[in-house]
Image (cartoon, rainbow, N blue to C red; front, side, top):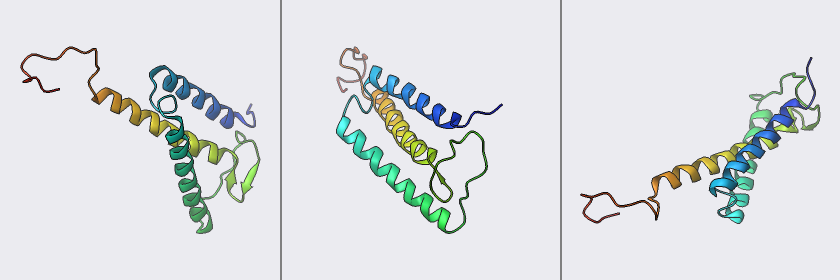
Length: 119
């Protein structure tokens, strides 16, 4: 049994999970809302243009799946595609925030002896 819209639901649940991690560790949106929204919007728009070129040249075609909701924004462009692209961009920002947080030393972290006082 397949449920139409299950893919969209999975995307929404995944966005929620990433948002919870983001909120907990202040990695992207909860660190800088404006920049995160702008970067996600620009990234999503870029990839939608990329998709449009791919669709126009016949490289990208929408396959048949009963997991899709069945709403097309354009030929071969299901509703789920921009949601996926926004999720992809947001996830990349959260991962970048996590890597950046991991790379910078914490203010509460004691300095290691032998580092010459550099930090």
